[in-house]
Image 1 (cartoon, helix red, strand yellow):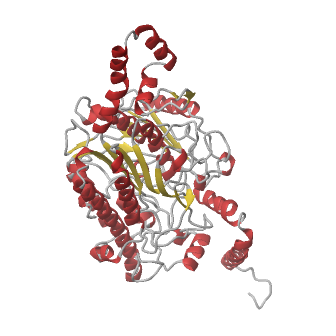
Image 2: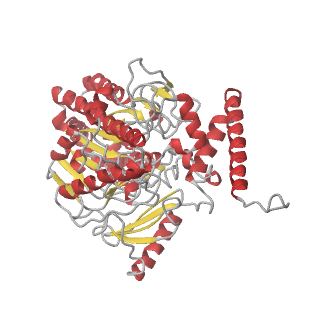
Length: 623
């Protein structure tokens, strides 16, 4: 009950009991005390705002119209005008660590998701803080809101565990329909890659099936509306979390949305990257002199054949269509809340879980073989049922423009994403906020907006992980210009790529293939594209921030990665031990098939090397 939870936060329960016995001398005093501690909070609960969190998957910094995109996102743009957008908001570079922090406000190295299982080095598996699922030492936002009188719902991607103890019902949600892994097909009930033996769907923590007319974004919103409507009779505020699969691979979208973008990307990723840079500058999200970094390994669009250009452009058309389709379904939710009279009392939070995805399964031989045998990858009708689209690094670098890098890495393109918040009472609206902010800040922000006192490391009499974020309400209400002071460091690490934010500065290192494994220093206010390394220009700051990072890593149990660690190898390791081996009878043909491919590949490489060696004459005839 909300009143009991509030009373426990205000003063210890035993002390409260003694106080009642010592000071309540009449039934009228008792009635007054009850009204103060029970009736008042319960009445206030009826006025508290509803909360809706909308999580996009793998959206780049400039993928929203309000952030300079050519993609049509009218509903998100409307929320931006009626609220605020953040230009310096950071998450983790992959999905489940971000989602774990978004759920708890606790650093991902303390909440159990130091890395997601699919990209975790083998030596980290089972280590403290690397469980790969949300641990029970961290209290979720859903739990705290439910204990204070909210109804709590979740639909869509979860990716924080699929055992009975780690599903949403055990983490504070009243009702749920979730996809438990990193992703799945958007049209059918099947996995999207050889990482999983099937797509794991759960409703109310029990395995579930999808309807025949399933499309991910539409279905997630439909379920959320169903839960909200069913709970309306309780007269309680609601918390609804919708985890979209857009735009995770496979990129898939309804044909009517794909057709809108036909030919839109025929000029290539370089042109789009420059257009997005200009759009972000026009929207006031970065300075006018923001430089674009030259990405290593970027392909030359003009060097492609017309057929290849069309093939690549098709994938970006589907990407844009998938994003617009998601925005369309968000619009349906907004319209429904307006019709029911609940929109005006609803806080909306929109963000992406990380930057745009550079993964290109068509360049990874085992994945390419698996995808080709299970999907159509070269049809003119890309985006439909049975097709598989993926952007790859070139389009990914355009959709994060004007930033550098993308998903999996600690550059701004992987960590800095759009954040839009609307519906906060007293907030100055329709503006951009450039103060550094972090995904851990969302939980304390929403708790304060809901009138719930955050825990301080003790919840229900149990020691729990402390939240590391700060409320953003003072910033949004114009009472402060910053969330973190210029000397307050905020650390980050995932799979060997790491960063330390302090004031306007960022210390960063990335593993291969994007980085060189060395530390670099950037002034993010002047150089959000991370073009100019200041390590040698400001050696004292460079040294101090390295010490700050070491302190962060030690305090949060960050483990070093092996020198030879590669993300691609981690994915292959996960597929072998979590897909092939547990399902050996079903996957034996796959094992034999890939073994044959490996053998043929080795033989072909050997022949290529031998053919490149000059022959030495051995006879007069040879001479």
